[in-house]
Length: 267
Image (spheres, rainbow, N blue to C red):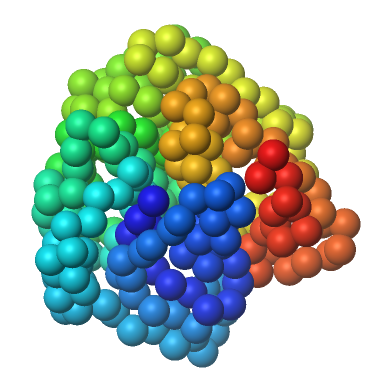
């Protein structure tokens, strides 16, 4: 699996958590960096190096080596130019035998991130025809299908929204992190069929949760080719990591403390 995401040195997010998680599942992991950060942007005084101008040269190595990836997993993309580069990467490396997972990191809690422009929103939709799996939260789902944000946990409404997104390309969608009281709903749309997977809400929101979930889904799907089971495994693993993080009083913006639980992924 190749990860197209930023590389953050400290705080357990993006490639820094996805790579060890997928590796623990017995899968070789490569990556294409979109940016280099010393720590996630919640913390002040972070170092940031935009890698956009270097991405094409970096990818050229993989082209010259004629590398075939079994899976491609994209995460946070910081500009319209980066999204365009990733679209070309998908074109060059997508085959009938592999799959692409897009985690459309665009916003949360009903609002897109301040840096997310209308152009980027439209460009992100251009990735959908290449994606087999998409893992948006409700905010991102509304943005992708160009509807005003509205909170909902209604099965028929969520199915309608997923069907609209599916018409762009992806047949496997999980709408993550829908808050319902003391529970979190992950709504699974799988080739027209729907399932609801619930998890107990544990503490406050934690940075890097989406990266952990998408990594486990990508690795599990590659091994088993069963999307529903992959989502269940990701939900269970993330919940255990969050509980462990709460138990040891870890800072919520230092990611999920997944290290002691990695051995479970090799089962």
